[in-house]
Amino acid sequence: MKFCAVKQYFDDENNNNITSGASTTMIPLPNVESHPLAILITYCKKHLKIKANNADNKKETEKEMEQYEQELLKKVMPQELTELILAANYLNFKEALDFFCRAVASAIQNKSIEFVRKFFGLESDFELGEEEKLREEFAWSFEGVDED
Amino acid sequence: MEAITRTRNAKVRKVSDKWSTNEGIDRISKLPDSILQHILTFLPTRDAVGTSILSKRWEHLWMSITSFVFCMPCELIYKRDLFMNFVERVLMLRDSSDIKYFALACDVLCDASRINTWILYALQHNVRKLFLALCGLLDAHTFPPCLFNCDSLEDLTLEMSHSTQKMGRVLKLPRSVCFSSLKSLYLKYVTFEGDYSTKRLFSGCPVLENLTLALCKWENVEAVCISAPMLRNLTIYETENRDNCQKLIFGTSLQSFVYIGGLLSDYCFYDSTSLIKAYFDVGCGSFITERATRHRGDAYRANKLLRGLSHVKNLALTPYTLKVLTYAEEFIACLPVFPNLIHLEFHAEPMDFACGTLLRLLQNLPCLSSLAFAEGICLSTYCEKTDWRLAPVPPCFTTRLKTIKICNFCGTEGELHVVKNLLKDATTLEKMVISCSLVKFSVGSGRQKEVREQLLMLPRGSISCVIEIS
Image 1 (tube, each protein chain N blue to C red):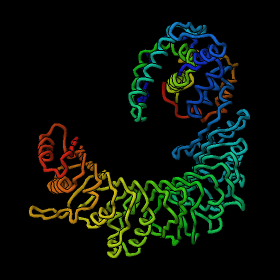
Image 2 (spheres, one colour):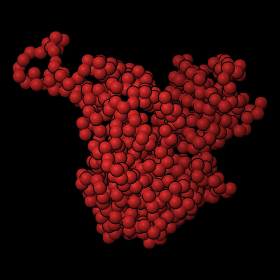
Image 3 (spheres, chains in turn yellow, cyan):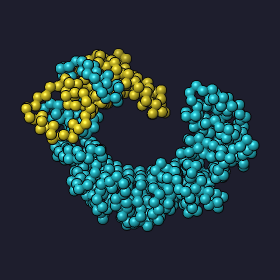
């Protein structure tokens, strides 16, 4: 089961000797909003389906999965990305968590700090001169970044 | 909307386009530290450390990273100071957690001791995978001795070269070598010091499974025994330099063997019955120029090596390798038999069916089930009145051969003649797969259709044979 947090819930229930009719049990997920949950469920189903279709061929599975992921990224709203990451983390859904984190990493790779700040909606809270010092210390990091 | 000039990763462009229209909203700060650090693991080291400047919260997040790739491109040599300082500060400021992966690719020049300090740091932090590609090494470079006695190391890559000439450097080994956890070892441009030193290296790797020796030099070594009790995969890339070093390979657990090189030294197998697959390419490799003349010695060595591969199930050769065998005719008559060989394939160039050695070899493959020509076939002696045929028909053609695959098919008369004979004689054939050359057959040309029809019309010795053409 991909959603490890949910699996844990089932395991715990069994340990308490409560019969759980899987189709009718309500599992409380207080930290997950309904919209990101819906996207994660779709992602999970798609992943399992692609895996089943290409049982022997790992390369095909990876290729199809990549295509699906690219399509998904086009549809996901930026505000949702954080929610998706949080949801995937809470549900302990490793593949989805890695995917969305990778997507964020790709977006900021080799970009200038100003770009990344804008991207995340961050403001610098450094004192005057602190930032300059850091820039000098890690000058190699800022060599040859992409132009904004 | 900002214009983003990066051309790679179109999908990312879409994400960042949408993000930048909603400026000012903090999207990231509600994620916990652990997730931000997880995001950092997907960034190159340079960028991950650079996030330090984003805000106070981010200043120290990168310090928990456990994988480091420090690469200084040769063109940026004038920025060398920046790079060296960067590596030093990163190692100094990070937390004390273990390092999983440490990669360093740079020029050493006069900074040998500085670089040794970094390697020592990684070793002291129980590094598991170490990659060192060091250029510009001075002659007498010595690594920290504990590099060769590291208990945590599972994967080691060592590339030692001298500036742009890519000449090897001598690897000086300490008195004791013990890699108790090392499973994979990749050595490139390494010049071995001597017999004793080389022996110490290989006997110091008790759990070694994968060994690759690329462009290494053996001029100081008379005889070497490449043996490790659990060695499964051995790959050797060589140059054209003659080194008079006898190489004995103990293959008790060896499953896969790859040799690409000039074969100017002696290779001998001792017990290679566990071998499952092998790739053998003499000369005409991508970095070897074709030799004008080959000698009987070459044929002898090629034959000896081939003999060591006689237990494989899966063999890949090149047409040129077969040609080398012909330089001493007595060897063709006693080519080894391959009793377990199920799959045979040819790479690098089209296989010329006029080559007698090919037919001789096919005779010695009693269990051959599948035959493939990755770069196609040809018949150099073809003329209109040719009487070339498969004579005598190899035994496997009438007992076991099920699949023949021909890639890069050009539709020439010679090729069609060969295919005609193959179809006629392979009476147990189930499938003939022909993949047409993309270069020779432009899309939509009538020619491909023509050739397709010709192929489908050919008489088949096996009733159940299917021809797939693409």
